[in-house]
Length: 510
Image 1 (cartoon, rainbow, N blue to C red):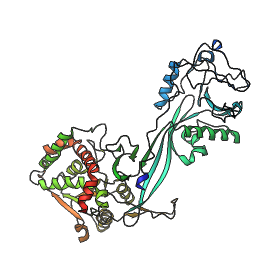
Image 2 (cartoon, one colour):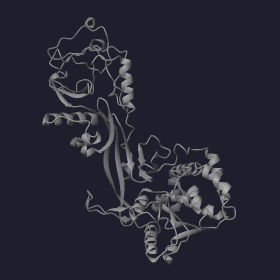
Image 3 (cartoon, rainbow, N blue to C red):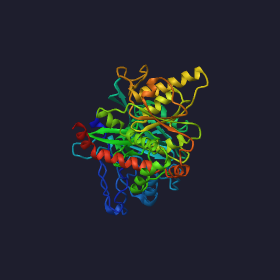
Image 4 (cartoon, helix red, strand yellow):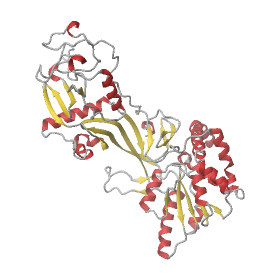
């Protein structure tokens, strides 16, 4: 399983349509068509662009004409439009004064004859002109609709499935396409399952019925060919997106994945689902040496109880290695409970010291005890190799509330304290035979005014206690203002682990 995680994924490179603009292009010979002389075509054109003379040959021609003869926009205009397309900007508002058009697929793509010459009769081409998508095949034009399609990226979404022992036994995979629908005046961006590509209803849905395609089997056949050409061109990016963050194994090595990609390997086209990044626009990576010094000085947040900060800090880095510890046979089977009265700054300290992802000045916790069980399960599954911050375990007001709180606490304790995965409902799953368990690959930090419950709850938690006055608020404010300290250190730590994991594993065995 690990060997196939990354090996086929390479950055998608979009091939340019217009290269070597100054190069002179020779006219092609087709059956029954004499080759034109240089005197008859004094102007050269961009390689790959075929301009058809529809009036002369019933809508189809094998001859090339010059840009000046065709009435096409200037080369500078064409390159500008194409550059805009590469950035995902629609050129549907582009108005050509000469009623010109740009072929969507340039050149001949049909079969070749025995002499190696392309056969005009099998040629296929798709043109978006004056707000109409036209298919040209066997010398005939077919009006297909009022739109064109551009594929921006192909995403393979993967979800890890484990057995009852929390070992990953299967990876579910499904492919999606991010694309744009462009009409003459508007653009519509969306995402579809790749398996739905040839069902066409998504064209109406994504465009709010502004885009349409003509009726008939012939049109649908042409639409399939049109979309198939876009897929085969591979002029779009490709990447893998995991449902969870953390360590993923490939070719005997381990890589740490966030929603920004693979830590330390921007060339690998793999990331996790959105919303789990170390850095963002407001929190940028800082100087590593300065970050380490600040990180080691975190104990100043609680000068009277520096051990509390040390435990919280070490638990955070340990959580980033949950998968590694588990593979070595030492799964962390405990949670961290940060206990203190209101205004003791327990939650503020937990966010500053323990929260790895999505750090920002007004950041909240990941989940709280008012959340539904389903929400708790969901956040646990996606937070691999990181700490989930669960807030607000308060004394219950009555027996009913106490039961609800205790049930939610047990969900968290069993997941992280026993490493017991949650069994998924397979009623509507595609693979009915799969053992549908969601893996637990991270750790949990709980904040609350108390930490009661059964003795089993107490045995599964390390507790650190806060009292009013324990926290130096000026020092805490420094770390709240410099949220880049923790992720900068965490990223360096992760890269160190990746580089030395084989040596660390050998030492562990010895």
